[in-house]
Amino acid sequence: MAAVRAPKQWCLTKQESVTSYENWRQNLVYTLSLDANFATFLIDGCTWGKKTRNTPLRGFENDGDDVRAPQRRTAQQKVTQLELLLGQIANYCPVIARNSIVKNSTSLNGIWQDIRAHFGFQSTGSHFIDIVDITLGPQERPEDLFQRLTAFIDDNLLTIEGQLTHHGQAPTEDEDMTPSLENLVVLMWLQLIHKDLPRLVKQRYATELRSRTLASIKPEISQALDSLLDELKQADETRVLRAGYTGIRKYRSRPPTCKPSHDSPSPKICPICQQVGRKVVDHYLSMCPFLPEPDRKFLSGKTRNVAVPDDTCVSYDYDSDDLHDAVEDTVQTCRVQVHLSPYLLVYYGQHVIQLTLDSGAETNMLRRSVAVKIGAPIQHSSQSATQADGLSSLHVSGETHIELSHGSQVFKLDALVVDNLDVDLLAGVPFMSRNDISIRPAKQQIILRDDTIVTYNAVKSQRPFQRNSPQAHVLRATRGTTSVWPGEFIDIELPATLKDDRFIAVEPHMPTDINKSSVRPWPSPHITSPVAGHVRITNDTSEVKTLQRNDHICRVRNTVASHDPSMCSSTPTVCPPLPDVPLPTQPCSVSIDPDKLLPEHIRS
Image (cartoon, rainbow, N blue to C red; front, side):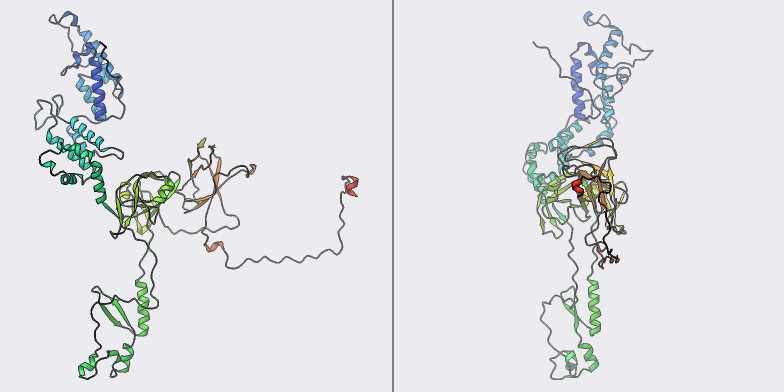
């Protein structure tokens, strides 16, 4: 018969969970139980004393005659075998000081409690409250979350060896998982997956729950979990409260007219003629022949119609001069202020993205063309999104989960990928809440989580444009030997005079002694945007670029818009006429080869 061998024992690491620790402990106990000399110390309730100078035998005594001779041991033998056992435990538990286990321990249960206390899951009343910190991880499967919940509850059940009491009474037996506790675990599991999932399960499995407990139908819920989540996601329509601006409509030719009234038009009745009792009253007051001339002139002016809430029109009479003023007032009233949305430039790898912050959007959105350009991973999504009107839908291609950077800040983004979007990346309330970002439109400021203030759309003084010798800055490698592989990038800090520029021009810096026609310039000339005063240069060649400290990498310079009036002069530049120089009347005498170095046949 083959000898029984235990699985290979492993050491504890600095990061352990309740499940991994229990696996380690159970395997270690089984390994130690295979040695008959350790069997006595593995019995529940076995204790010993600390090893000190006054108690070298740790409270052990010699076995008496009532013990069979083969199993009879002295106190010193017991101490030796105990320290061998404790040494084995210390070998596989490097996170605890060795003397704490070998010399200062008094029982196996005490050793296990010390290890649990080190990892922060000691069986205490406060440890049970940590269940509120359990959440579903980004890449975690729902079944893994259920196992974590179950293991946590099992670990907090009352035991006889534990030190916890309930209402002042110590447990007389180990607590088991009750059916009600199992139902509670399943309910928490459903709520952690989606806050509305328990309500949907109650509706979908109403017939089964009449005669079965929630924990009993857990296998059926697990099989249909994907369809349940898809149904919940389809019900959660995301609204984007964003309105575009197309310009201001100006009414210069005539004032705006109101919406026609649905009531029948009023008949032509002159109130003066009707009051006097004349026979002819079918004319307006302004056309009455008995109206005084000054009043007729005033009423003959055109009227201005104003729309009121009940869809009726109220007429106000104006003189011609008054009408002009009214039209001008109407133009001023129609001018609604328009401001650009707050934006923040961020990096995804070496790609610069303009992130538009929108505190009215209930989700984050990334335009599909931008996602493809930067290589963001796109996953399937069943969510839908609509515009602020609740009717205009956006075509959702999927979802993406990426990390963006701005200086030393790293932002996590979970966004829907949509086909049509007027900005590259729309960051709504979820992004601002998760990354602790706030905006202050009055000051045109964006406040990051570390209280860094980023100014957007700031009006700054323009530098004079130097047409003859525009200033260029040479960027150098600031670190030691650096290898930039193809497709990778190097991050360089810009000079202080270029950090606030919206766009900068990058061009290669090649030594004069290199044949430029045979060497591909790197980096290739392009225009980019700095992010937090830094620029990233990508190695777009097929070769590895090795940079030494202070090596020249490229040149950068500020850019000026092509429509900038400083680039062109209003008056043409006229060159001054050349001064009149009198020509010589006779040819000058020129001596060729005065030293007579050329051959005779050439000189002649």
